[in-house]
Length: 411
Image 1 (tube, rainbow, N blue to C red):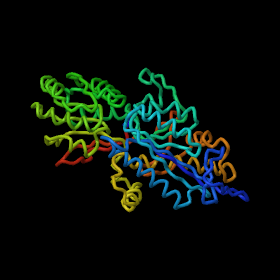
Image 2: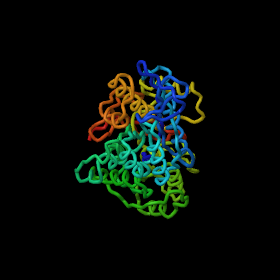
Image 3: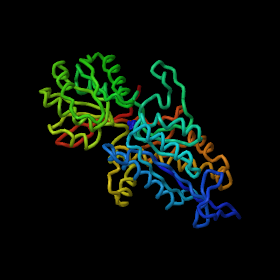
Image 4: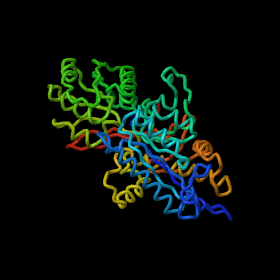
């Protein structure tokens, strides 16, 4: 999304004959001296909606980053470095995200940030991170403009911020994938398209609609709803009157679940489809009507079916976190691990210690990061986008999301 469209790292480093022992003081290398004596602390910042309607996703992001940091420390992934996190709540509000970005950028011990969930929030943060040379890796943002510039739709690709990376694929891929499934696999030919007027939802819906029409389908109508409102009966009645055989919703699960419910109550017994923003158990719970047959796409393959994710799942469960890792847990772990690997490369290249320009060096090292992660191969292209373009379609069956098709999408 997510736009769905974060974390803080702390590192401890002992260098040769020099041991940093000052009590919690910050040095000019972008790390802080560890008060226990014996190293440098590097903080990975986390920014996500930790409260509010999207907190189920935000808590999964935070916990997964925490697990990556605990694993790195346990395994001494970066000799002499201890990682810590600092998680800030953006409540899915861009202004709050910007304030969080300013705060994280001002903390010299932060060398990387994981998050946010929402693309609109990310837009408010990117400039602050760029100015501070602070690496940002989102596990959920899917809006193409974040990495490819505002004119990507015209075929003009220009990376706006060198500090921005993501482990989730973009809506260009997700929207086209959804349209192909609904038209070719589900055999739906007349769709009504709705969005929530937010960066993620509006962008995804537009990409979907364009591809659906290109394939030969008909867009029976379009409408928008407002986030945090609950009465979508007007939109539901328009959908019923249009004769559409399906609904595509660009938005998040709180509104998506209510829309699905009200469409069915209006008498249109047709499936609602959406992107990863609705792929959550709360989408199903938000609907009073049975919504078996509703569809969602999500980035990546089902984590539970990935051989590469077995250890992550086992370790997450063993850690006893209160909340599930949810839709972006694996991508959050990989986002944090990519920052850890970049720090590792920077330290190794500087004789076992952080350089004075650690943040800039970490950003530079990110473009060369490559490893087998929870979600598969983790690496980034020239725009900072993930090279992993795996997607999955899920369908509600017997009151639960069930994967029905997974593939590596080729444009």
